[in-house]
Length: 297
Picture 1 (cartoon, rainbow, N blue to C red):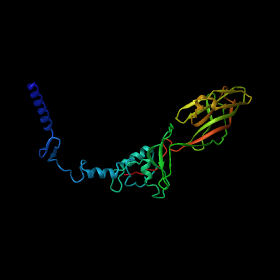
Picture 2 (cartoon, one colour; picture 1 turned 180 degrees about the vertical axis):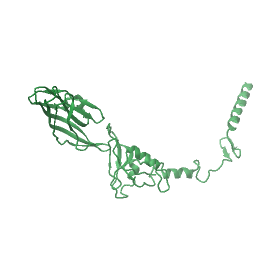
Picture 3 (spheres, one colour; picture 1 turned 120 degrees about the horizontal axis):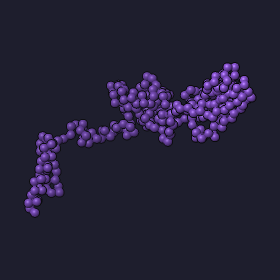
Picture 4 (tube, one colour; picture 1 turned 90 degrees about the vertical axis):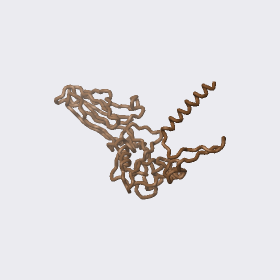
């Protein structure tokens, strides 16, 4: 038993000697005092508040705040010279060198609000805070804020009634030809039609075909059913809400009206987009939209 104990003590001593060999110290650390009341001596003192083991260092770091929402930022930068996308504003702040400082970052909403009311600037600026509970496939869901009054807006959308627009067009081509397009009043908006009514007729003895091409906000396109007419006028009414993909509110960039005539020549297909009912939507931070950047440190 004594032999086993001796081997254990030798192995343990070798381990600590090996470990101690990896540590360089100016003076050996001395353990003094009786059992249950020991203390260490010869530990080096922290270096004037710059060592993380020093209480002053820790207290000062906590008071200064470590960025994000952990503390009040010290300063806000001047406004960027131009507007930029959200991703570009993040990079702008990381690269900014202003007033002798290069530790700038894009603020979260709370950090930006510390400076609300500090000036009369009413431009909305980016923050890194995300809008809660929102998910728009063509929208940057960031919260923006202005310094004049601290007002903020999320990455949501504003919806209004779509202004009715008439489209009239014709073609004698024997292949599908776009004879008109209907789009939102603002090219950056999307719209959601609920009902479409159109008239079509053929001027000769042939047959004219017509259809709608739905240009979705994600860049894809979907063709409607094909409709046909001869010399008599045909009126077509489309209830968009009866189409499964649009029943859930699929936004569109535009609708192309297409037609062709089977005979061509003097035979002409006429299409009149008589009326469109629906809604037009403005996205606050649509992909590619730009705002100014303000950075904090």
